[in-house]
Length: 82
Image (cartoon, rainbow, N blue to C red):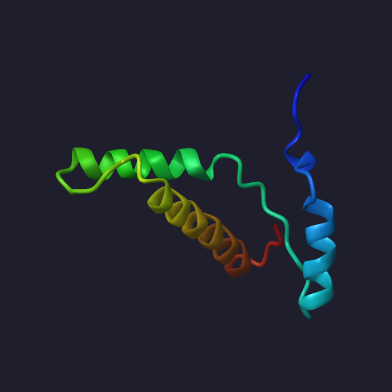
């Protein structure tokens, strides 16, 4: 049985809660591959002589969050909604 990305327990209730709190509309983003992309970026930096652990989960999460934000910013600057 294949798990769906949208089947995270509590996801919908969290979305409803955020929509009630925020004035602007909540945009959903498919973030399934951003952690892998972040790990890849860390490996590239490590291979280029930059120091740091490539398995630091906090660092991976921060980079993944930055990738998601950058994707949203890029789409906004092109006039596209994600």
